[in-house]
Image (cartoon, rainbow, N blue to C red; front, side, top):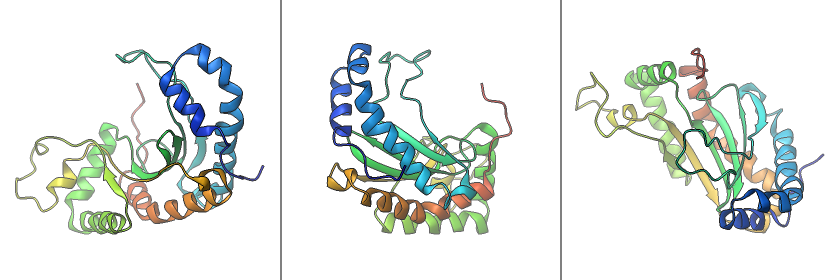
Length: 220
């Protein structure tokens, strides 16, 4: 079906889940989740899949948290995320709806050890490293937030005066743009908002695809 916007109660559903992250709340409101959140998210990704198919396949993330090794045992995620990617870490078109509103993003949200090694090798070189700096500067100028886990110190073997030391400290690197809840979230124009954002972040995803790629290591 064509995307017409997230449902009227999408944000209310997650506001309630933040207040009561429990199975009884989920069971009582799961139809709202399916109608106003997950269904529209699937439609949104389907609308965008052709244009961004070179970056991977569309997927809506599961609503359940992995609590096996977490101190926080609440069972449900307090947002719904969708992605088009070939594999974790090698560039991703990401979209999320939750209490904060709408978020779009791209880049390396996760880097396995082999991917991190390739990322640092590329960022260390003048050609690829400077290209990445230009991409990030352009995104900042358009209002994107550049984020991702970083080391407190520098990676082993990297000199203190390296011109791209800040980049080399990253263990993850991605860009995020957020829109607070508004009427557009519930309208067809929300599709154009995400499409424009993904087009802006495409150079970062293409850099990640070309220089980092999909992990060749088995997932644990």
